[in-house]
Image (cartoon, rainbow, N blue to C red):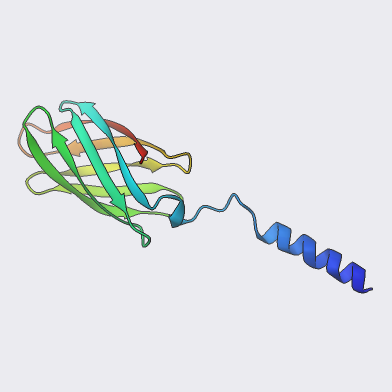
Length: 122
């Protein structure tokens, strides 16, 4: 009976400890890449252990920096805004394979601009 109990306990522990479970710690660190569309340049963000995201976009066209701030879910969904001096969104997905991609928009300066971004974890 004791062996049967230990067998069930071991099976339960193996099932409960799946390595497929995503955690915010899979994404913590520095990410960077490039963006293109109506504007182009480079970006970088830092993800902390609470899912808070801060960073910058640098426009090669306007030679300006735009702040990025937002949040990241445990599944890697990025939801951020681009602000000061612009007004827009920076959204997408980061993966545990250390790759990311998504879209961006920027309403200021006019006319509005938009495009895609991609990058990797450093």
